[in-house]
Length: 289
Image 1 (cartoon, helix red, strand yellow):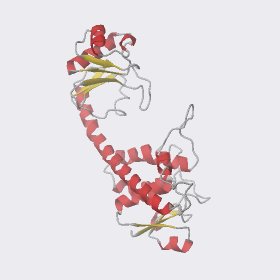
Image 2 (image 1 turned 180 degrees about the vertical axis):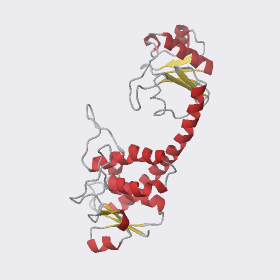
Image 3 (image 1 turned 90 degrees about the vertical axis):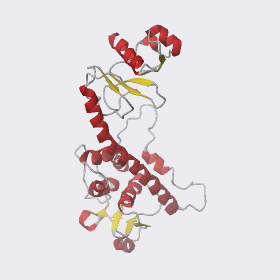
């Protein structure tokens, strides 16, 4: 792959991430931004241009009328999703990692590009990765707007983001192993980890686990309430109301835990200086109805 073609002018997260995925696989690939049909045809691969979807000829466009490819959950593919579908597995080592990137980054981009609303606007709009990409567009007040230059900057951002998220996806496999081992020796209602492991999204389905305790970098121990489901702000169990916003000696006096440091005003986390202190806080909270 020596040259990738995509459209010129304004850009979106769809074409930016489609090109970024290819950049991770083919670092030396050159970007050609054009709408000239003859130039597009000479490229080795086409993203978001060409009005054709055919992996065999390296065509990854979704604008043509006959295109109607969707995932099982109903989210339609845009060009970023098509490129990830056919090239993404070269960047990850498992189906779980592939799906993590698709679900957390690529699907939201594809949905927006296809005009599909996936977040309800109850109060304010959600600031997304797509908004970040839009911020790379030239300032409309400037006379000489260089979209090609800013597109390259946006692609660089997207490639770095994908690298970090791919590494995080790989790390989650190790996290699952650590959590599985810890669960074998855990109390039925709380889990103790000797150091921080990203557990969010991994244990919510275990209905009996209500709190997770782990060590902070500074040596303190934090107990966090487990959400009722991944992404939810509603917890299975909260710390007692009378603990809310109490710190140090005030919290120690109420709880009887001498090294208690802090309880969040919304009661979803509490901190102690020792593991034993954090465990005691959790056990006290579990006794409260």
